[in-house]
Length: 213
Length: 213
DNA sequence: TAACATATGTGAATTTAATAACATAAACGG
DNA sequence: CCGTTTATGTTATTAAATTCACATATGTTA
Ligand SMILES: NC(=O)c1ccc[n+]([C@@H]2O[C@H](COP(=O)([O-])OP(=O)(O)OC[C@H]3O[C@@H](n4cnc5c(N)ncnc54)[C@H](O)[C@@H]3O)[C@@H](O)[C@H]2O)c1
Ligand SMILES: NC(=O)c1ccc[n+]([C@@H]2O[C@H](COP(=O)([O-])OP(=O)(O)OC[C@H]3O[C@@H](n4cnc5c(N)ncnc54)[C@H](O)[C@@H]3O)[C@@H](O)[C@H]2O)c1
Image (cartoon, rainbow over all chains, first blue to last red; front, side, top):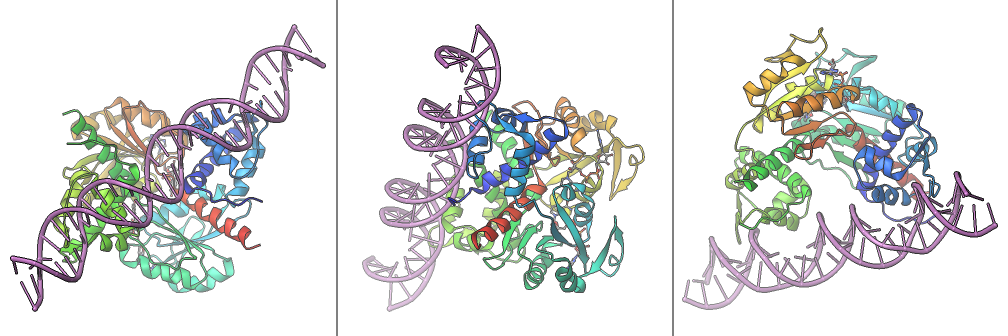
């Protein structure tokens, strides 16, 4: 099997294609072309085909792709042919929203624990989850085989929480605190920064205003 | 003034530099080098200088950058030398978290209204905001000069909410619903997809497992 | 079964972004 | 006031991503 580096942008789009295919499938669509996928998610048809080509040949020339099959392939590629246990660190407003979001479950993510260090929050229920004391993390992480941690604590606590995750065998981190965290190279880490996208918008609005002066 | 296209990746990093500079400033740091910024946010020093070079010369050779000045410049570039009124559409879990998030305020964003169509939510308070009926949007948008809309409603309602925003003069949209929205070309729109980053993590974990087989 | 229509898969061309290398300017010390 | 140090700004180079163009394979129709 030829292994060449897959651009992260390709993986990003694959995730988007995958969800689009699920929607098509739910709507009873059985066949789809690269052009229709492209149209549906807002990229070029060539891009769709190029992205898929990193992983194999999934379509039929002259016909297109079988929706169910391609959906399964994309899930497999993304590692979603298995369930992933994850921990939400921080049961604040964002942590709460993440816990209640059904979209994760649909994609095979299982929220195996929510953790906080505020005594007034520990023990409270969020859906069918109970907020756990931070100290319980090592035990629960091991028992539930938690490999992914989501950081939803304030900036000031983010690094220590990251350290705790790493120390307890977590392999990947999704960080919502707007700060660069220090973790060993072998840990996969991605930041989600909600302000950045807003500021791209204001940049563009401002830039546009400058252009029209 | 030479106007050349600025890569979106550059704008993204600029937003991150900007926040890092604010932190340095709060900590009393007065001068910083491209290397220190790079270290602090996780990019290369050359990248920092290249990004800044799109907009002018802000440093002193042999010395570095004045933190306060560079912070102001980055804010100005991002359009954050003014306050922006925005509307949160959807007072669900995510909308609630966004409303209470203080980080937006700090950067000059003013949440001028939260809107929902669920009668049981309308009138409820979120911090010092009161959830408004969707029907109130046109009036409030005009009065408050809302130019940015944030979509935090379910997928099924996202397109109609986007249409409402556009119809009422909103110029930019931040969309949290994982679906491609149809808006006129002149509207700035960006999606924030929280699942995608998680799936990049599982892709990489799976890929790594495959490598080591 | 041959000709045609269609849509994939892919190598080449193009565009875009990131990195490296270096010339330039400021500060400092003797 | 000159040489040295330092870190910027910019040009050159490399790398990466996207788009283009077309050969290839499939299904359909006459
Ligand atoms: N709410 C948003 O919309 C939003 C938007 C962008 C970024 N963020 C970021 O997400 C993070 C969380 O935001 P939030 O609005 O949910 O904040 P929040 O204050 O509502 O919640 C933070 C939670 O973390 C807990 N906590 C603090 N230190 C902890 C520790 N050491 N271990 C475990 N738990 C700890 C607190 O008790 C609290 O429950 C912040 O870093 C914030 O900058 C939030
Ligand atoms: N909560 C999360 O962590 C999370 C994560 C990723 C994506 N999202 C996306 O964000 C969006 C909101 O998620 P949520 O968890 O807050 O959902 P939610 O169900 O808690 O909230 C949605 C809110 O939108 C309101 N609403 C529905 N139709 C409306 C309309 N036409 N006009 C105005 N308001 C309307 C509902 O009354 C509800 O209050 C969804 O599209 C979801 O896929 C959420």
